[in-house]
Image (cartoon, rainbow, N blue to C red):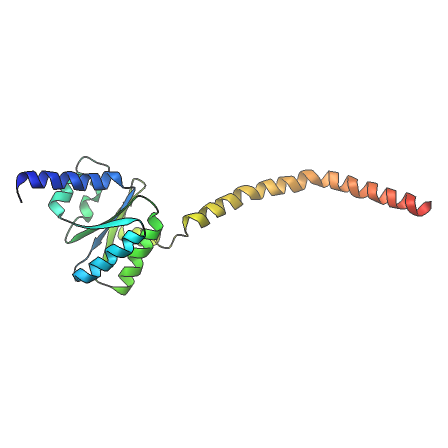
Length: 174
């Protein structure tokens, strides 16, 4: 590969890292071209892009960026799933594919400014979907408000019951 081609390739890889919110690194040793194509297609449907990368060019591309701590994971055959949307769905797709094809191994990743070890990257796949997490947060924020409403409306409710009892007593006496 000519020097200009390498420089352009390094810049393209750097842009991929910088333009995406997360990346999961994999070892694809033993996968066939057809299996990698199926993986690419499945990840593309989840909003991610899967690329096979050259280690030396990738190391040059991440030098001086927030992704530099990933250097220790860039050993051996390297495939990267880049994404900007939902990391949980991409991690689920990778984990599901790895269950069907044991040759795919998740090495780790980078999410929210933090390097993920292999086990942490796999655990992202077990998180509930974003909508469920948002619903749980909303519910936990609403719960104290409902309790406060119950406490504050109690005296008014008791007053209303007392007035109703007095009105019923007067109507029966008449």
